[in-house]
Length: 256
Ligand SMILES: Nc1ncnc2c1ncn2[C@@H]1O[C@H](COP(=O)(O)OP(=O)(O)OP(=O)(O)O)[C@@H](O)[C@H]1O
Ligand SMILES: [Mg+2]
Image (tube, rainbow, N blue to C red):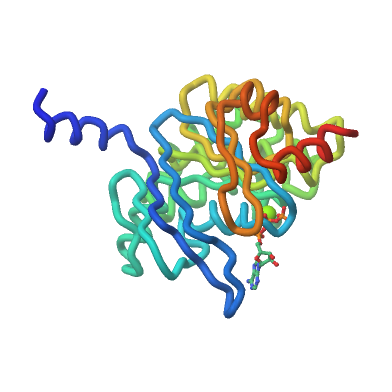
């Protein structure tokens, strides 16, 4: 392969690329010169102290936050302010939040069908059949006709994951998906995430579940004060953290 062909081939496997991303909230510089490349199928865990910019960083990927400087490409599409481009990019990106964000007035099944029907224009029957398949996969199909308020937190979060998968995303973003859950429900959600990772989904997960990071992450990224301070494969990251800030952070979260 010549050099041009090699570059083209390697670009097709790139899912996300951030080059010199900077964001301010007014005077507050929340993201500072972020460089991040994520290949298709890669699993990234992002951790760091509260307020370090983790949520802001991943929310830039589907334009829930705007950045002011730098470049971001998702699936080779450069992010712009053009609404059509934003929609193209959002179609590739699924997101799961800490607080599930399910529609309380819709059943589990309706929550999973609403975007396929209204955004993808799928016939209702097809959307429902697909939703049931994904609900099966997260082992909650028997709750399909219930409302979110009738489910436990762990069950609601699994519905939120199924709902995202119904849109066939190329990459999934998770923002502390287990941190609002009671301890006994954390595992059932992590199990679903681990399965997704093993199936080859590209994933960026903000989480402090270090067991999860050790099991599935290809890379762990540590952020502090709007910067990526350190990134490494999990075994190196945990056994030999390089910066003092990472060492301090790990001693705090692993210390209890
Ligand atoms: N809309 C906003 N306006 C102004 N400042 C904001 C806004 N959203 C977030 N911030 C600030 O930006 C910083 C980064 O916030 P962000 O939510 O990305 O942090 P985080 O690392 O996800 O923290 P946590 O672990 O608590 O979720 C924080 O100092 C926060 O107060
Ligand atoms: Mg956050």
